[in-house]
Image 1 (cartoon, helix red, strand yellow):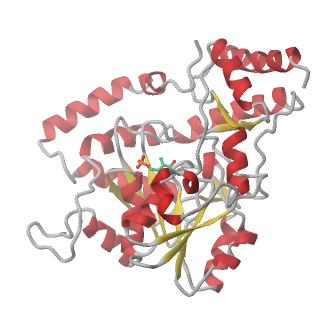
Image 2 (image 1 turned 135 degrees about the vertical axis):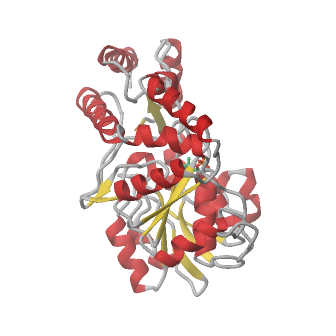
Image 3 (image 1 turned 180 degrees about the horizontal axis):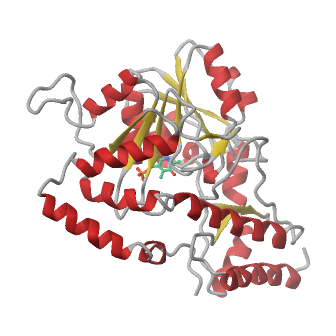
Length: 370
Ligand SMILES: *Cc1c(COP(=O)(O)O)cnc(C)c1O
């Protein structure tokens, strides 16, 4: 059995350090907003090439609090990709704003900058690029468009910790940027966690208040905040894992290279393609085929785990029935949903296992007449 993802294997190598950290946190007697969170925030800000990092409870909260800190709310419009995980849209909806979808490039699956301007209205407040599957969106063009139209940029960097665009880290291009440390992300905690990065001191201050009941000084509340704190234990674990993020990402890139070489020209498979200047940390290795369902069944029968990212694009989800989108409204996002398949790729996946995945895919196409 080759699982799609093996979280136990990913975390096993840190077990001794985790146990030591657990003991330290228990012994400290301080479990919320203490030394561990402060230190992780400093380390992650430095890693992200931003001045500030604020730890929060999860990635969705990071997006919601980013929008709130910018003052985005009722009846405002935020440009979002039609091809993304639904959390990007949900954050916009939760602050009372309206997600305005823009189609991706069929090459990179990231939002197509050339299609953004036509969706900007008098109500538009921000653009939310999502660095999808580990690949940087075209952040230079996007931030230029935002500047021309006087809009904020909120990067959703949940899938791309460590990626770069034009040699500058993703999660540093927006006025404010959100990320998630959900266990399966490139930098994953042992539970829920997330963070916001920014170079803007006043935005950092606002988020710092918002995540903690609107309070900096205990029992004095400046604004109506929520409880969305990163906890000490997760911060302690994340500090340990952050040190290996670059080498883990390098392993992902090497595995991607192997797939790229071995699956090139196999059947009708379309392999990942990067935009100029965009680097990928391969959070997901996504291939496409017109025979996706049959290919997935074949791999399942051969005990190889796969996933679909994602089977239903946000505009076709029941949750967004109120926006009255129809099938065909965002054909590129729909085409990706209908043809995509994510195959195993993670630090710890052995070369032999990867060969099995490759051989199994080749076998699928050699038996078929397409
Ligand atoms: C995972 C993810 C989120 C949400 O993160 P959580 O920590 O699960 O709330 C947001 N956006 C994208 C693109 C994601 O992949």
